[in-house]
Image (cartoon, rainbow, N blue to C red; front, side, top):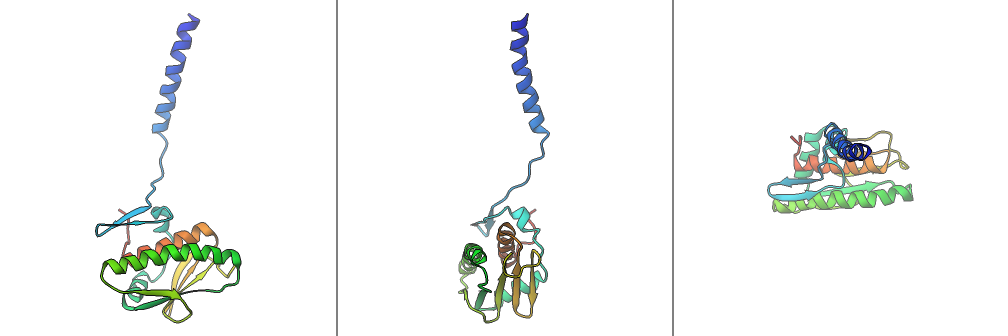
Length: 167
């Protein structure tokens, strides 16, 4: 009798575990986006990036679309932030330049202080919130930690690509 109970216990436990896993809500995760047949790989979950706060998205896209040159600027106040800006800036610029290149548009993006520009602020260089805003011809991307900075960079790319929804 004990042997029969032992034989039934393991399958019952396995069934219970399998059944309970069906009840767990899985978070959506999307890091690759198909734009006109071309795949763009992002460093964050796009469901998080699309929710990153941004104002004046239409004007930001128009600024990128109409400017042959965009500057990326940062304060150079913090070695830690500079490391973040290097990674996020490279990923952001690569995707934006690639997007325009696929459309046959030459886009120059470099580190400089001229307008139009993207001014990047990090946790140690003045960021007060996690947001993207536009003041005159300066797009201000600020984030209070590295993860949010990556999401903000990905959100900026989504704006340039014209992606307003992931549905």
